[in-house]
Length: 124
Length: 270
Image (tube, rainbow over all chains, first blue to last red; front, side, top):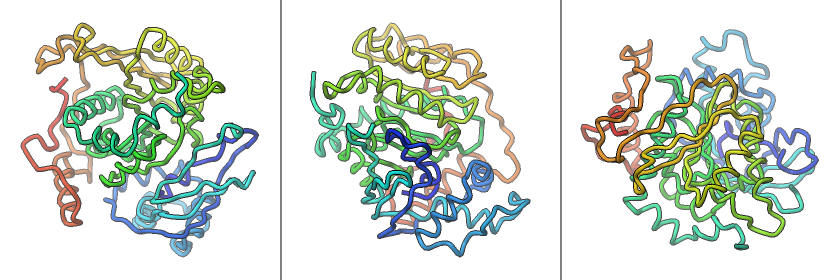
């Protein structure tokens, strides 16, 4: 699971959950991959990102030193920042571990890089 | 029929592999995905973030990647997702039941496609399942997770008219506009149905393709003229694709052979 997906993923499918975001990450195994840098894509993604959730996730996977606490002004021209974002969003993958709903503490296991978001009948 | 998780049961490990290696299946999925992407009317030369609903073994996802977009996929079958892993697809995939909704933050995706998947929701898996309710949950949450002005395209195989009615009505209930586009309506072999859903604004529904679905130069489909100019800093599509393939070869990954068709505009196919 990439961190770009984590920045979008919620546990809202569980009944009575209000936001279900961000999910806590317990990363038992993390892998780095190589993805082509697309400057425009990263620039367009930035306004959509939840920055706090991103820094939180980066911390969970041990990459907290890469990102500033808040999004700086003029980020579109900061190539260094864009490349760091590209790396953290697309090139860091959680292979094994689990995600946890912040409201119900319900755990979603991740194995082989695939989070299991299936809900039980009584949860929907 | 009251089987548990019909799609899941159908696609066990061997079935998943056999399905994915069948050349006719590959060809049909590729064509359907390309057509669905066309119907999404994404801006030219931009990498979009797309959701692949019922992504299975990643056949459709590979076509999305080839067209230069990022994607996130959901499927209910562990076996199909396992096959996607074996094929090292570029998209980020997750195990999920689309009838339980699409669990993402609001406005995240630039578009969504679904190839040959949504008809599975028409079957009740257990006595608790109400197909209409699950379809509505899917469409309602999908609507929220799409950015304003973007589209979702569902290619599907309905068993009968009441399934079409069920699917379309729940989509409209969820707030989408749009409707059905039928390609090659008179060919039993080539006929394909696409539900094109828009999130406000939208514009007119594209026409379905006419003819027999063969190599058809008389296709009535009208396509926006592709910009020939290259936007600053952006390479022409073919050069970008060749570079990416070279990179993947260096990484020891499986790459399709280069040919005169690599990076070719595909509009004429339809």
